[in-house]
Amino acid sequence: MIVRPARPDEYALVGDLTVEVYVDGGLTSPASPYAGTLRDAADRAAGSELLVAEVAGEVAGAVAYCPPGSPYAEVAGPGEAEFRMLAVREKARGKGVGQAMVRACTDRARAAGLSAVRLSTQPDMDGAHRLYERMGFVRTPDRDWEPVPGLKLFTYALTF
Image (cartoon, rainbow, N blue to C red):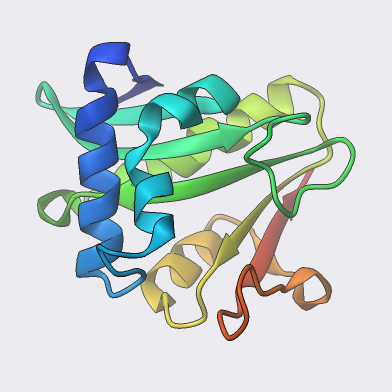
């Protein structure tokens, strides 16, 4: 498995993959405005570092790493990074793909001398929560928030 920057010819694939994972996981509906945001991988690549996990020559997942100053960062403070829109194809789950992409984000933040990596997650994403906690992330309820009324997001941080 390799985690690397997404290539422009992969943006449509990454957008489709991300929408598929979020819709199939019940995290958004195909008609929601957020589905359009998820599909726009080219914009994510312009405003963050869009990474993909490649397994046996196929894109198995994607994540947006948001360094300081990224317009995609929502909960990171000064000197912190964030990652967003982590998506792993169903057939690749349980094989370390998500962990490898999170590790790529934390490695980038450490190498940049940042103090933490933050993320937001929906309360019912138990598998994701277990992954983050295994990797040393801790809940930060003081930063929990609602991007739209009625959609509460939990936050986590890994500090260095």
